[in-house]
Image (cartoon, rainbow, N blue to C red; front, top):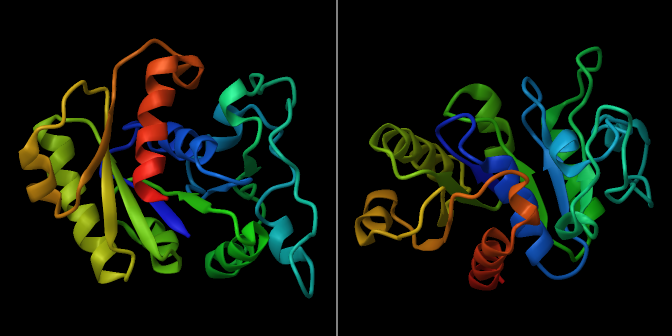
Length: 218
């Protein structure tokens, strides 16, 4: 599993998780690991149910067929063409309190041989540590502002401490890849996703950027 992590909220982690998943081979799974501020289901255009809690409801294996991204409820936008082959696991509802480690372990099994990405909370708080602790590696997401980079340095340190070392960085709302970023964060810069109007994943330039990052990860 790969954790999509970053130091700032609103930096583009969820878009990056979906963009990378859409560009990776097979049928990738993206799990919303930000249980306090979930938005993966809305961005992907899927209904909120079934949530990640369904992964721990079965006594034995995970459900054999967890829904692919399909048009959701009244509050969800339609999925983009870029994410139609991505399996989306929304965050649990507030009334449910599953064990994060159990959810992420089941999600990893659900993915089988296909990639599983965890859309992490921002920062280095305990809620961000849970998915990093379950992941095998991480991808950092950050804009090029100095405050965001400083926070991402902290996230990178946390990821290394939890055995999910960063394997690359995705720069968002950026047209260049300054060489100093790789040195600062201790991992290669996979791509730079240019600033474009929403919906980002409907635009060809960001999709090409995420395809470049996926090729580097594959």
